[in-house]
Length: 333
Ligand code: WQD
Figure (cartoon, rainbow, N blue to C red):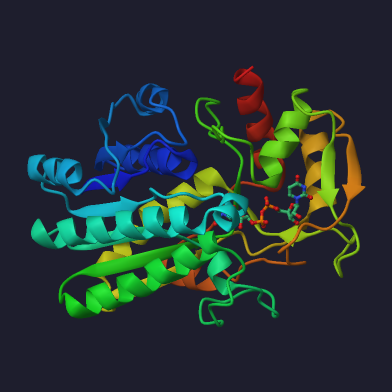
């Protein structure tokens, strides 16, 4: 297939482009490089021996994006482009609604104009809000999201459902990511946010290479195995492979499909720190700080639906993800 990947130079986007190319798909990337770097294109070439076509385009810019659709007959779109910092979304809700919703609406309008019938969307486990029952299943209630970033993901899932209902023959798939971690085993691709990190693993990596003195653990009085927050950490290469597998859903009868992508297991903050220390034979100093506003105690996925319908089965261990993250970060020094 010929696939347009929006946000394809980002953390999950770039790893997905590698999997797509290695599986024989032709990839075209559009990205505005607001939170990524153009040198990722050369790194993808070093890994796959194929240099994907790249256009520096903001997906909200309909005229510029139409030119890309004009030049290529795409079979599908994988839509990663969007702002994704939970904390920033609370400070700047209008920026997040404008950017994440406008870019999606522009993309969908062009898909109709150019008759591109399939879209795979980068959704998030945050659409479940504050789930009570673990593991989280796709049919569990959505909503009561705790930040505008999560709400944009929820809205876009709804937009996609309405879009495929109104456009017979069009198909949409939402992939609800749990907590992506790790880096490409080649050490060429990884999580290098241009701004301050949001998530746990980049913080641990910064402590590991001396850019941070210690990690602040957000609370150790949750009702969990050791009091610290429990999450479903999934290796970014497994997550990327999940996108490759999800392409088959475009041939399913249902026009709108949605899947959890995680490992099905929960890992606490302290367990992750210890796994990182063991994998890399280093110490990660930490202090126990106050809880972080909006945090939930526990979140991990039921991945049976993706396993049965897509054949999704994550291969990498937490320890391997910690090793890959460390080696990538060390290479960035
Ligand atoms: C994980 C655990 C923290 C940092 C995010 C966002 C969003 C989503 C992925 C896609 C929690 C603890 C963290 C630190 C800590 N992406 N922590 N010290 O909050 O589960 O959700 O997941 O949608 O980016 O929703 O991930 O990595 O921020 O936190 O103790 O310096 O680590 O309290 O328990 P989270 P996270």
